[in-house]
Image (cartoon, rainbow, N blue to C red; front, side, top):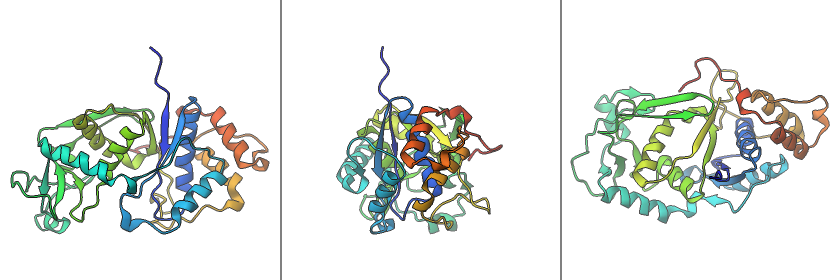
Length: 299
């Protein structure tokens, strides 16, 4: 049987401009899809509307074009998908896979909930209370899940025991905002994605997504998580840790630096090439097996 065409994506959060860490992820996802003659889609992850910075979407798209990326199809905005998320949420509630919860983070801290790799471990306090959804968060019942695992294309076997690592996780917040975990799974299915390239900080959280795929009856994509770009203090490079916007005056140099971080081949004289030429070379010579994994880099 013929293989399904590869469909990958890049999904920035418009809480500010792209930074170097974003560029590395964009480049890896682009090369991984395009080197397999696949499609590369753009999704704007603006589900958490209070975090959206005005003007950042236009700046992100302008930067992607300037740095030589060409996306396929229409851009998906999570902020246009709330009705669909609500349908998915209602399905999980009606089928008994999810329940309303009145516990806040403060409640959990007061109750001395144990910390886990994905945050405080929820002990199932509201699991059998039968609360109404209004003004409450919604959690997935993980009581009988046990351990979930998958094969990452770079990191190999990844597994977590969900009840022990995080417990019943939130898929909708009490303020009405849909959680990242729910939104991305429904979006991946809508966009027919079969390949996800993203940062290694989501290695373990991916097991939560796999459980949601199972509950909805969706086929899960393949995953390639890439090592995080870190600042001088060892923190993940992000807007929260002071990452600066991409400097278009150094576009070619930044692309070459991103390729080197990803362990990819670069050629003498590439500094003089334009961004489109560098990205074209990156696609042609892409080999994800060359991406260096820092020792102990499991989250």
